[in-house]
Length: 186
Image (cartoon, rainbow, N blue to C red; front, side, top):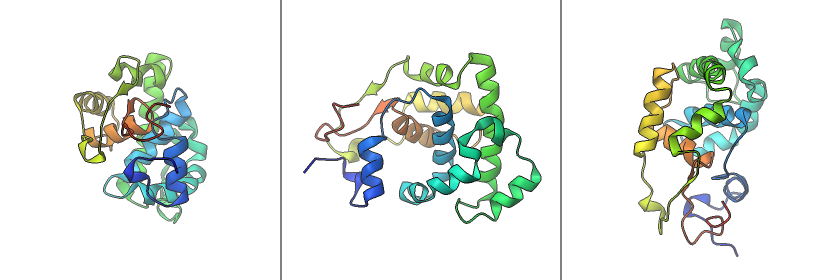
């Protein structure tokens, strides 16, 4: 049996997410947008909850197309708040639409969101060497800098802890423990 990071648990979807996605460097803007929406939605909840609603988010947020989401108006926002396939928190839903607009502004300034976001790690994955999941920080200097800059650009639900979770998910940081089979793969 493969050794996994302790948080991967026993649920098949969590194991699959861990084994196939978590920590793999993202270079695609739509995937970046997806993880920003999902990490913001997770605030105060478990990743397990969000992962279980991922398909609902994909349907509700136009396949994570930031151009389409940026066009959402009041009627779309109200429909989202009635959608049981997502977390129906008014602030989180509104932030996803506002973040789509800010995301497009970043693309306009930097060419791609990818070009912008990787600046916070010097264009490379930060490779940590944790022996135990309890060693992982909740935030780092890089996630604090990212949070400050995203907030300055109008993003919401992008505190330093959310930014660090995003960095882990999007592969800006490799936080697999050293005994995890994925540690050397990503």
